[in-house]
Length: 235
Image 1 (cartoon, rainbow, N blue to C red):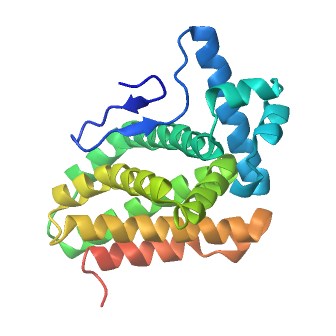
Image 2 (cartoon, helix red, strand yellow):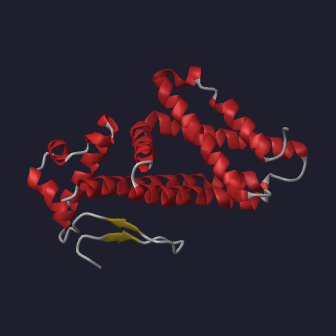
Image 3 (cartoon, rainbow, N blue to C red):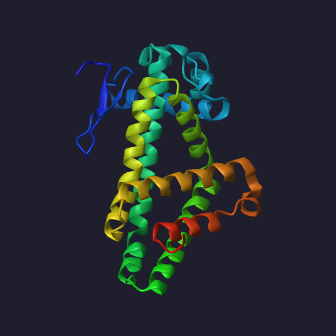
C-alpha cells in the first residue's frame, strides 16, 4: 500500500474507507495527525467546510503550519480525512448505543406477540427508546450533529465525500435493518431507511430551535406515529 494511504477494514467486505494523508509512522506522529484532524473538525463545525485551510487548522490545533502541510499536502485530503475520522467516531458511538440498549430491546422482543395491544405497547416502548436517543444527541452531541450536517452538505460537491457518506449511511442502517428483519416487516431495508430519515429530521428540527427544542419540536409524536405506521397500526 502506498505510504500516503491508510485503510479502515469493513466487515461487510465492501471497499474499505481510505485515509488520504501521509501515514504516521510513530505513535507520537499519529497523535499529532489526529490532533490536526480533530482541530479541522472543530473548524468545520464552527465555520463550515470552507473554513478548513492549512493555516486555520494549524492555529486551531496549536501546531506549526509545516505539520499540517506535512501530513496533508492537498487541502482536499485534509477535508476527507477529517470526515473519515468523524465517521469512525460516530459509527463507534452508534454501535455503543445498540450494545447498551440490547438488553432492553431483547425484553421488548420477548413481550411482543401478534395481539394488537402487544404491538401498540411495543411501538410505545420503541418510541421511548428513540426519543431518548434523539435527546442524547441533541443535548450532549450537538457538535457531532453539526459536523454531520456539514459532511452531508459538502458531499453534494465532492465525489470522494459522496462515497464516504454512502458507506457511512450503510453502516448506520445495518443495525436498524437487522432490527426490522427480526420484527418480520415486509421490507426491512426500506423501514430502516425511513426510521433513519425520521431521526435525522427530528435532530435537524431540534438544532434549528436550539435550547427551546423540547417545547417547539413534537419529537415523541413524530416518532410514535412513525413506529405505529411501520407496524401497520395506523393508515
